[in-house]
Length: 561
Image (cartoon, rainbow, N blue to C red; front, side, top):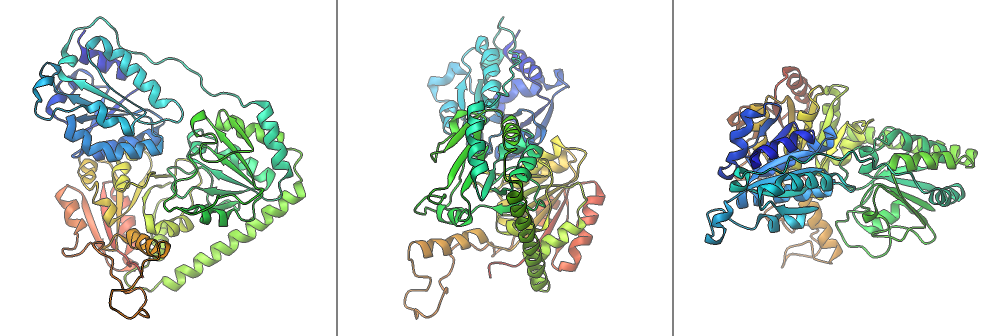
């Protein structure tokens, strides 16, 4: 048996049915053998970063291991940013790349480099197969490591001559491992005692709640103990229904901001996440003095990593939440109900505030973000999946759309942009029966705009909405924050200090020339609609979904005010 046969048999044994890739010469053994393995569908991309981004979101949406094949050193380099994002998303993906023939390694061949060293900083494990005898065992280990909590990407370099070597070592097969560990009763007892004593508990629901299918269990625990629920500032999944009265929104990106949000809480339960991804340094702790901090994680690496905890449990997330629910029967029910009533009143006030915000911004030109989200919601099917990279329109998105289940929402983590348009491909492959709405800013989309061609090539009926404000708006907000935090004047040198905020934002405008997204889409086989008037948004979005084809809608929206 040749190495390439071991390769394919290992993929099939591990349940792989899609390969996300960009073809190249050193991948010839893989590409030429696809005819012999019709069970495997190759999703072809025009850029390696898009392939990795699609596999990242596919792994999250399908519950399977994403599998990617890239092309030697420059190709792997093109994918590094998206591999980093997959690491932050804890997406179980195995990434391979064709490598040059090892017999010319010392001659510095064209495109040659140490691929395993390149990938190592952004993967859980990075290795090169040195002989066909290693192929089955290494790939078997790659799938194992990728899926161990916290999950993440693994890289394997495949030299072209190794793929053609003969071997008697068979394909690697997955082990039947049952990893859902039960929580330590002593830990649950310690946690429940602190929760019962708390006067104002809150919970931060990380992505692992959705990944573990623990949303319903979290919901009943929240309702029993009268806790509020937050998401991290960046989240990849939906771990709690956003229309629930206890849902409070997303946390700030610095410790003082988070501390302000937790100011009234005497207990914080962190569940299944890195806690926290900050953008700015701020002094102090996110938790007030005397606040009890609890944590539940599926594996040790994250436990008490950034903060000391008063009680921590390492076990299956769903089982731990269930055990906590059972152990908190002694909670003061009247106090919990009073907190729940307060959450409900706050939710009604928040909804009224958003309605007023939309009404106030309704007639602005260009269209306000608040109105855009209202129009998109009105035009989208009830069972729509939102793939989100809105960034500065994120607040209006969360206050307008309702995400009930874990599979209603997908987004990127780590802060790298371009994930949305690429990731929508993977979600569409994983969820062929549901409508997909991909929301992206114009700047973000240009990092992976080649994804449109793949959507057309594989007939993926995604509605891509590009929110075109002709600027890197988030960078302008961050410049404002930088100036304030580091006491940098916000006025031009030589101008009157009374002239506030007149210092320009350098190189943050996407004009001269203006990007034409409908033309870009047409060039890649995707129909497009350019919307300049708010009253045309609903009609354009409804028609795009009805077409059953990939469609891009460019909506001109307001810039930074």
